[in-house]
Amino acid sequence: MDQKKLKASIIVLIFFLIIFNLYYFSGYIVTRVLCSKNTIINIVAHQDDDLLFLSPDLIHNIESGRCVKTIFITAGDAGSNSTYWTTRENGIETSYTLMSKTDNIWVENQIIVKNNKILIYNLKNNPRISLIFLRLPDGNFKGTGYNNHNYQSIAKLWQDKITSINTVDNATIYTKQSLINILLELMKVYSPIEIHTQDFIGNFGDGDHSDHYATAYFTHEAEKKYTKPHIIISYMDYAIVSNPENVFDEDLLKKQKAFFSYAQYDNQALHQNYTPWLMRQYKIYLKSNQKIK
Ligand SMILES: [Zn+2]
Image (cartoon, rainbow, N blue to C red; front, side, top):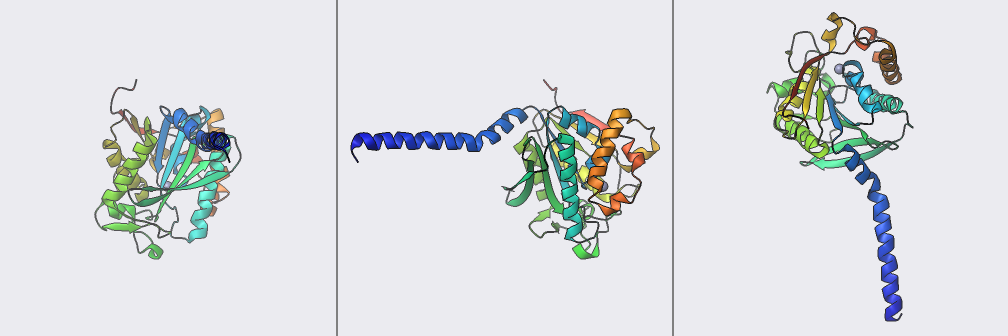
């Protein structure tokens, strides 16, 4: 091959490499640009907490095209085997698909954050939507944990009754500090302007699920160290049942639909009456760390 032909071949090769890279990373770049000032992180304990307590805000945020990243701290196993909690994960994927009005196709990614493997599912046709499953064991209502996971719970981790906790798939071990660090790192990665979580004002033992409080306490601790201008919102959980109904009409219909699309995958949810919580949504705390421009 003479010099001219060699030069032409190299130029063609470089051209195709550039096109391939642009194609490969275009989704990533578009998502980063779209999400740069538009991201909300929800951090909840179980796969239905966002649907029950953070909605219809959740639905409004998805419908308005914002980037919504929801982190589920526990596997939501309720002491059952992997079939139960993986099915719940399928259920929440189905519900987010419905809220996003697109096909139920998710792209699985694993990222390493501070040496911990994190499982992320991005909605294929709307990569602004991501679900992140940390899969720590469900701690039971009072934080006592379950036999099949050595009675571990995030409530015990928060209260320093245990020093570490294993994920139910045995992929990762967290300490109290490393769980806070991971949440903070995920905040830095996604750069949210709003962080939504459960009730961090209430206390263990006052009538709500221990995982709800522990999740909110861990989130609040990480959020205090997240320096980008943002708003933190804490939502009340089961206690909203004592407040007046405040979700009506189209919002109520959409909230019900999103919940029931999930509940088809969760036997326990399907056979309980969640109507009182579907009819309500209450913020217990809202604060901006700086003036939002
Ligand atoms: Zn829950």
